Length: 246
View 1 (cartoon, rainbow, N blue to C red):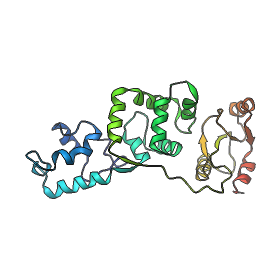
View 2: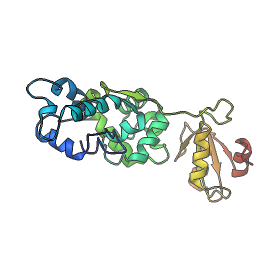
View 3: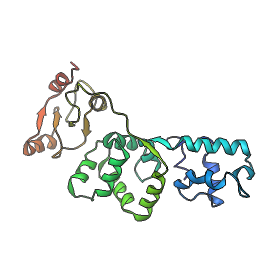
View 4: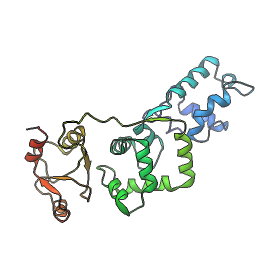
């Protein structure tokens, strides 16, 4: 619960670690969804937040308003806030950018099976995700108790889709790109950021869904795999020409 209200997660004004601990000990909240029913349960009557020690009508009203404001929240924050093991703040952004919406993300998490099928391949191919994190995600969404808690939370939220750049004229929009080997004119991080800004998805491994491999010196096994899959391979200079960065 403390993780859920942390700065990079829901960051609800007036509801920090101290308040969460107090409400939890009093039995007012047991899971994240309970935060969004606090006002209905404790805004008036004999057991009201404004009558609780350390609170008043003004502070209670401000808290309820802050909770209401956080019902609309970015997808990456929600994914991070779930507290799934190995899924940190940056991973939340990676997953949000890849899937685009909560509907697509949650659908994939429900359908995916460890080490099986295209959904699994797509998940572990996200650059920066990998097998360990993917297994944690699958475990969370396959756990009936944890999945029910997530569903109860989401029912209270308006989860905003990930921002997508305007890529109407991009030659790589919608394509899955793999960078392998040594890049000589930009860092791997710069190449990834530029590709994503043009609407491409950057994967860490070659699969049947890969559209393009940008191979530098020392490409190794990745440069061999695309031969079997019939994937287009270009060098760094050709890539820069393609995206107009020469």
